[in-house]
Length: 188
Image 1 (spheres, rainbow, N blue to C red):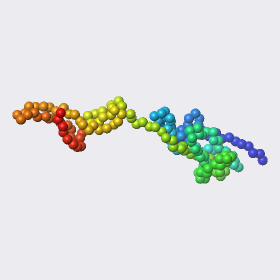
Image 2 (image 1 turned 60 degrees about the vertical axis):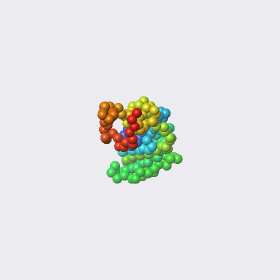
Image 3 (image 1 turned 135 degrees about the horizontal axis):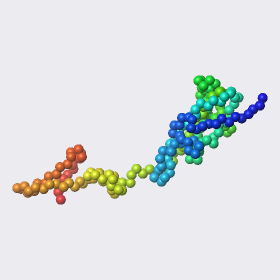
């Protein structure tokens, strides 16, 4: 009886991605955005589960899972699991491979599935929501042109002035729902 190694291709496009994606032919955590310095921010964890792989014949053992399909250049940790079935209905539980030799610990079967879990260590990122320097939020009640977003404390209103027998009458209107409280009124 002879032993031979059969390589089964694992297409990364066939399967379920959850927080992962394929870049340059390798599996990696999904890119979410970039921070203010241009550094890419990835999802903190993700999984990929292969479609059912038909092995075609019962084999005595799986030898290894190729780890070259995972992009680990961005400090990503990974775990590889396999499960198997002899009838594509009843499946074993996922079992983690042995990383020293790549040995698969699932029972022998005609069908197999692979699940890869990726996780990344948290790293600090600089996120700038807004710099509040161009005044795009300026209204009658809000100021945003000096690098901060703040409510205006002193609101200048232009009253209409009319002459009255005892002096001048100053009138102005403002919408009641625009102000919640008036602390004082000063005339200049």
